[in-house]
Image (cartoon, rainbow, N blue to C red; front, side):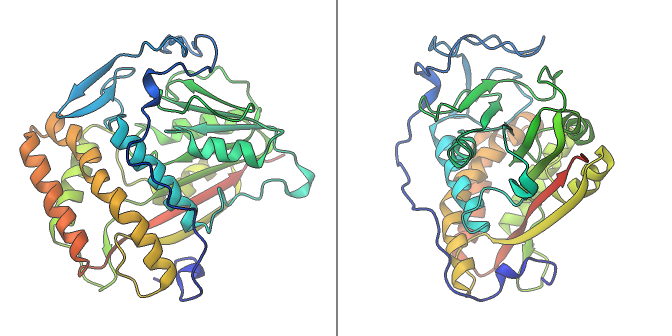
Length: 345
């Protein structure tokens, strides 16, 4: 584990965001958002009037999915998924001791005026960023309208597909943020090249996600229910052309796109509260409830649509994986990657 950031070593307990989990999170998709007029950023964009309250969905195996670019993004967008995404936001913050990013924003007298959060999800990161930089315009875009109807005035949300043609100005954003997007794109090189074109000279880009490679602190190769689950889901995703195991490739892809001063920070992410170190134990404790939900969210559409599994088979696999996490004896973890780069001035 020598390649990890030293923060995984034993030390005092870190301060984490409060666990104010709403057991019945609001579903923001059918309310009047107040975000303004219709959105049509590209020729392929979904024409949505955000305040209309009209937003179609498809329901499958007890979960709800968006219909914009149906089949491209295979995770649900229902209330259970909203709660999971908000929980994962807390985990990503915990891994950075409460920080939203590792990029050296605001240094060298460079102002943060325009921020783009790609795949914003519930908008939690974008809202926190808008509060940290009240003079900046923060845009969060996503395929699903699951963001809250309240947000700082300098934060707005848009429905868009980042793999379609961009109409944002080139050389515009001082910071572009991508989090939890492994498995979302067929061509990461293309996406990061576009990010480069639309980043302002001297601006930054940052990728945040885990590597989707299961490991054990025991030094053994994981071969239990979680490993089987991981193998099935990753194989199904790979067959669609949208692989999950991309985090370790982002450093090279950022450099290939033209970014310089590329920095990689790795953090051990325990799948459950098995570590003895108090900081790691707390992160594992935060992870456990979100992981139970994540198992079904990631597997349901992929395994039924791609591999032809039944919903019962998927639930059985998820239950077995959850039992192994609850047991904790396998001491499983993944590696979280925070990768940032700068566009030359």
